[in-house]
Image 1 (spheres, rainbow, N blue to C red):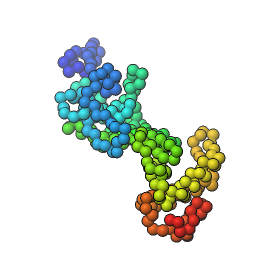
Image 2: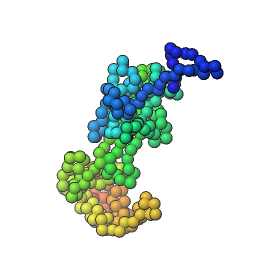
Image 3: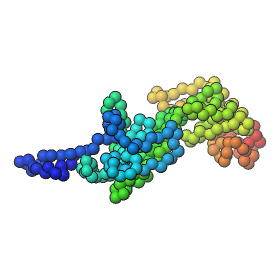
Image 4: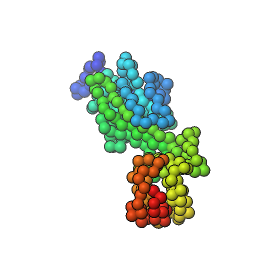
Length: 262
């Protein structure tokens, strides 16, 4: 809290009697129907740029908050109700069961600064929903913060096809390379190889360690790893580039791809 700008009396020990702030956060304002001019993220956002004004500066044009799913992002600067905060920053709150909760960035900070990221994903489920908000910069003089928002809904599989909340692909399949989902159409020369490896993985006995974290290795997983390495070298899964020679095919993939098949 900051000393009151008008009532400046001190007690007998010299301490300030009257204090103000900090201002109510965006999540609590939303819970009480008081949040205005909030930018609302769509289900899918691809590094969308969002500029924020300080939450309590309604006299300035622009968005006062960014709402991404159940998370509220707000800019706070050292003035008025927030005069006692250490440095200009972006705060992230979640509203649950009538209360707001202050959340942390991947760096462990609660007051997000330039370069900080707020990420939400399941590291063991590459098809689950993903969210990443990065603080590109904070301008205390111009009273502006710029955010980059990435959001992806969960990928839902139906009989070999994938659906992102209603967007159904063709009759091909999907593979995941480095966390990125790549579509493999049914007419692609890679489709038969991916289907073969997927069938082996489905039939294989997969076990986990005591903590349920690390997938134990077996032949099918090594084949899938080799196939992933092969696919990562290609510019596109839709059209073959240079035909791979027999000597270039990884040994662990020999039972999946025949020499000269690309």
